[in-house]
Length: 409
Ligand code: MLT
Image 1 (cartoon, rainbow, N blue to C red):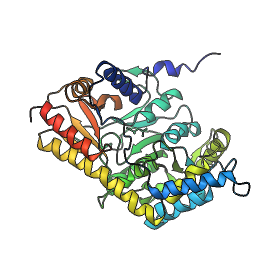
Image 2 (cartoon, rainbow, N blue to C red; image 1 turned 90 degrees about the vertical axis):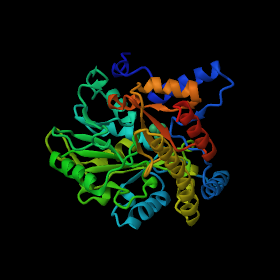
Image 3 (cartoon, rainbow, N blue to C red; image 1 turned 45 degrees about the vertical axis):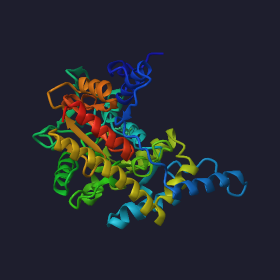
């Protein structure tokens, strides 16, 4: 068989696999080094007790004939979709029905898989820097063109830099599909209501669809930052929203997320007829996915119980306090920093114009801190690194001490 040649166009390994491999090699050479992980956004606090208890009960369900669950609904169990519709949407005055919610094994899978429902010749717009899944999965699907100077010829790049505060703005050219993330990975900055409104207007004018990655919405504390794109009038006609339980409830290892595809959202076919995207996504999921596990969905449902409100809020606040500590320490020491207020991520500019990878090597070898090189998120990330607030408080404090010492601050 012939392979999908697009794989050969991609860099050899995925960003976080490359970082992990470099880290592994360093640890093998320096087994004595106590490396503090501030690279991948993986959580360190355990899963809230409410979810643990619910999953234990769900395991017991599997042991009895009367409560056993085999294949579940591909779209997810009603109990979880109803809880999401009520708590994440209705409670905020947003009209999203359970029927428009699709449970998955995480936001990353959905963000990559959504490419099945739009045409291969779609023009895709991505923020640079941005979460690499948007770029890599569209390259795999054949929408990238050629890689020239770190950028793919067929994408519309939404350049983010110090001057625009790392916030992508609607481009002057047309795009069919736009990936937006707020609070953003990797820069940690978020759209205000007015900024997001400009994007919804752009999408409506261009008959485009926004794929809105809202994986970090639990970290929003500012009043003028929307938690959902559907808080913006008209977004139901132009946006798909993707969310995750990973960063809110420690589900990075359990795997559960969801995608909202409103029934009012359409695309056009070859003949110019309007086709429901919800219908296409349902068709896609029923064909290629057998649903997230019953046990995990029971765990996610429990996060909406009153215990969740307290426990999960405490976990998110813990990581936010770490992020705030990183941001303030780095800023006080004279670094240019972004994010870290409505987000667990802090985007740090290299103080002496070093490349991202050389700063990565320096942090690892001199301070035993592993970060993510900014250039891994796109050419515009060169000269930056990303730190995360997901480690423990003690390790975060120690990391700050080491970084300041390294730069003689
Ligand atoms: C990140 O570090 O950017 C994320 O943890 C990656 C992910 O969620 O897949």
